[in-house]
Length: 219
Length: 219
Image (cartoon, rainbow over the protein chains, first blue to last red):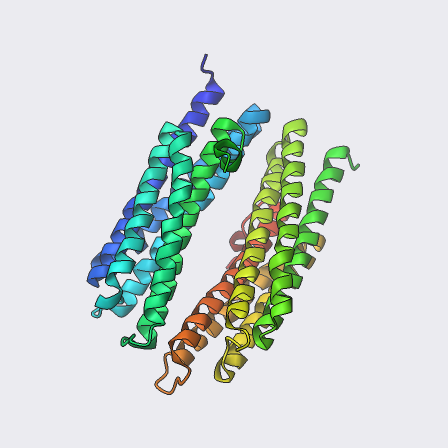
């Protein structure tokens, strides 16, 4: 039987999934701005971040109300606290998209990423965006298996980051210090977006099973 | 009159201050490792991080127990939730110290920061460590004025970061791409430590006054 508490909690998780979709859009647009030197799209990412911040505030208010008026215990309490943490991480992922967009904007009319670095950077961006998209689905479906798989896929991001460093530290790197610094920081931002995506997915595992992904998957 | 709830809450805040002291040590040691190419100290920072992680788990367990058994409302509820967020941020500051230590370790027997970049990087490290030290005091004293001043001092870190970029992107930068990338990432790590310090201080303002630092200081 569903009661008022669980209806409100479901509404909080619906809001989390919606915020995650906003983050997915932000990551996609930031990458488009970056790869095309597109200042209009960069500005869109930067100005839309306030919507994510406001959505976070609404989720926080709803979670506080649940804690305050319903005084949940045990699994319900852990779920509400998990929601508070998830929304912080989603907001942070939005901020990291803004950082990407700001590097794109800073280099216009140039493009921050030189051709030699585009394949690796494009792949990092695609992996990050795909992870955010899958996390939105995981929040909605509470699919524990999909969440555990997401955690494993983070290894591709780590490998891409190593490849990216190898490229810009190679003897034949001909694009100077500025491009190398941009790429190192961009790599860091995409990697952190992926880290947060894994963390949000792990919290879904915890909410559903009461266990960490490590305990559930036996790895 | 002090009751059991407020005694336990005080104990949580004592633990937060103690963790912040551990982070202060981690930042100081990571900087020492970085500036001296000191692999032993770098390893100490990396291996001691598990202590911060465990202390975080203890604070989280205590906060959950307070929420679960005492079902606080209004200001008390907000204080417990603030404690949960503060401990996440303190743990993250410890992780960032580990990132600094790992760059130090990666470059041994060289020193990651060339002489030309030492003054700015040393100052960034000193500002970050000082902010962490002051936050530990602010958690203990609940000194709202000191917390608001800390937020303003973050501006020095922003200026140092700009100076650091100007140095490594100058035409006379003679230390190559690797050192530039290290310095850009190190600057990012110290800046994030400072950001988290401000955020923790802001949460103390909120716990004491029920208002954001913006509302309290009128700025």
